[in-house]
Length: 528
Image (cartoon, rainbow, N blue to C red):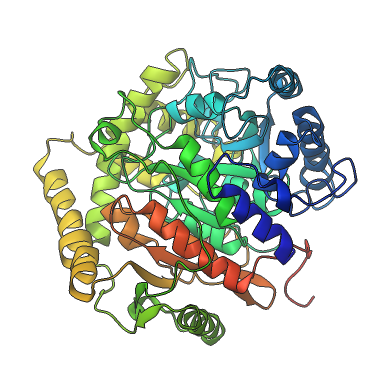
């Protein structure tokens, strides 16, 4: 993306509604370059000024999905499209013509990860054939908010099946229903997971922006590996109602975009209280405005979680350049703060598997009571009966372990939950924030994208997702550069409900560096 375009997006977002007419560029939106790296805020402004219609934009997205996702590189990122999308866009154009604008997303198309319920013609399956053809009886709360803001729900994206909780030897980005999603920067490299389809689709400019979900790394890791901005909000900021769950203590949805300004726009549309999710009711009110400024890093206190740097010298070199850029922008960067590597991994798995058994059955009864599967045991049985299609590469041992566990009043679960909270919060992030007076903790989000290997499964080089995921705290990743053409992200982790501050910091870093660039769809990243 050109520097001028980024600055335009930022200026337009300042009030999340006030048009930046003086700054609007004169792009001919009917041209062939309608979507390539054009940010959502710029597209929104073009519709506001009458130079672009929602129908034109939606049709351009559909054409690009056909040429890039279904043909050409064949990313396999989009699992289903809403057959009514063009008609929905036409209605929104009519409303705008009559002076009726629903909200800040009016007419903008968005893709949703296929574990987010929509009460329309599309299915909600988590990528599993067990739910193929099954439609949810109503929208998830976040979908209701997106529609109220004027968004066109264009379709559903592929994902790591069941959000990557089925097996310890899974292949990220693969599902029985959707196949394998490819990384647009190198088609032989992983997108990571589980929001693989959303990441690949947004990175390839198939759509202005998309929604992913995260339990531990499933937004920030694929965003980092595909050169995107990804925001995992605080638990309780965006309703979990309607999202096919792994675990209510860590699950959340969040935006995946090409700019921080777009992430802020989409995040604000989704954030808010929901009577069906108590955590959102108990949360403080979301920020009414997010002022993205180029000066946000000046005086900001950032602590380096150096224990989370891996042994890959080229990744570490990119991170050190990011630290230098942060300091040049006026940040006070404290090196090597005390934030130890996690000791709660075993406890986290106990929590996730206990909550999976309980939460998944509740979602099935609530959103697809007509489905053939109504419990984890039913899904296990389905997978065994359809093993050729569902388990060609890896099994379902985590499902089987979860199905044998007790309820949420079990002592082993309660002890593990308490251990996770103490170690990730009291002895982890909270201690670091208090001791060093930090605005955010920084680290490389993840390593480079690994070669896809369905036989051996994933072999990632670690990352910084765990502390914020287990604590339930906000985590923003922003493009930080490349290693041999493969993107890397820089993480900003904050205290609970500091999303606005993280977005401001991330925007300032983004504007100072402008690392984002379009993918090249290399067929191979290693010599033949």
